[in-house]
Amino acid sequence: MKNAIRIGTRDSQLAVWQATLVKDQLHQQGIASELVFIKSEGDIDLVTPLYELGVQGIFTQTLDTALLNNRIDIAVHSMKDVPTQMAKGIVQAAVLPRASYKDLLVYKGDEKEMFEALDLSDNSIPNESGQNSKLVIATSSIRRKAQWLNRYPNHTLENLRGNVNTRLRKVAESNWNGAIFAAAGLERIGLRPENSIELDWMLPAPAQGAIMIVCREEDLISKEASAPLNDDATALCTKIERDFLRALLGGCATPISALAQWKEGNIVFSGNILSVDGKEKISIELDIPSSQSDELGSKAAEQLLNKGADKIVNAIRNA
Image 1: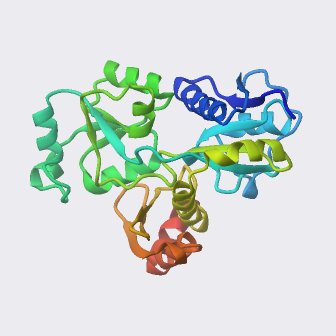
Image 2: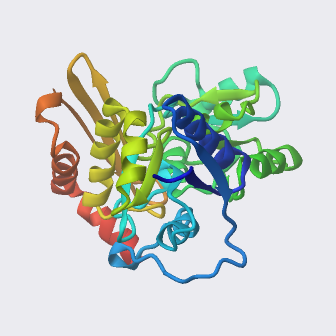
Image 3: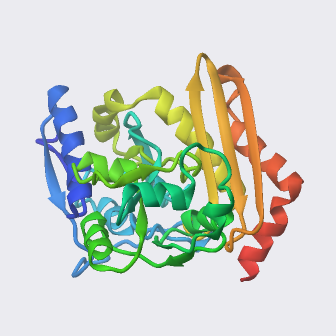
């Protein structure tokens, strides 16, 4: 029996919060664990993770390498960052209960003026004033950019990168009108500003708001330790969303969104794909019994492709 489960984590505030949550939940199960902080600089790459189609997980590769090198036993990730096909030799061990899946706008200036500029009095398509406003909004997400430009074609989108703390600081120091963040990331570490608006009309990234634990495929001890932390409803819904993304051959650079929700024994699914400039959008909505949801994500993607999504996918690939 291992003395303690070694939990690999990046050293950002959010990553440490998520890893500590897992550590605390393992402790409640009577399982000892410790955090191992992994930095990409200076890592000895004894085993390079191999991903399907050569696509590497930008935010997970360092921890995947540490897992395969047996430097850690489990890794904790924001699930939306995990490639739909994980590195060979690494498997999903658990999915924790989902927090908020929503995106939100952290804005600057007067709240009333911002609501008027965005026509956020309800969730309808913006009226003429919303369409004619010319705000500058920041985000590094192609998905968020595409959905924003689809709704507000006259706005300017600026690039914003870095961890949560860095991005909040950049917004404060900039002349932007606001920036888009994942609600869960800000709320988990107590950094959601009062001047923020939930974007109920914006469909999230697949698995946004969920936390995934991964381990080596042959590590039965870590699998057994993680199993009690798994939330079945979240695991099912995020699988559907990730199957949808995978079937459309999407990734971080593709404006694909999906949300599956368990409602009274049914799975209610919404998904879409947009052109990068936001001018084209194809959506799908399904409501089926959870007992029939095994291949819902793949079937929804197939229906979307039949509606013309293949043209958008091909255009993005060619670009």
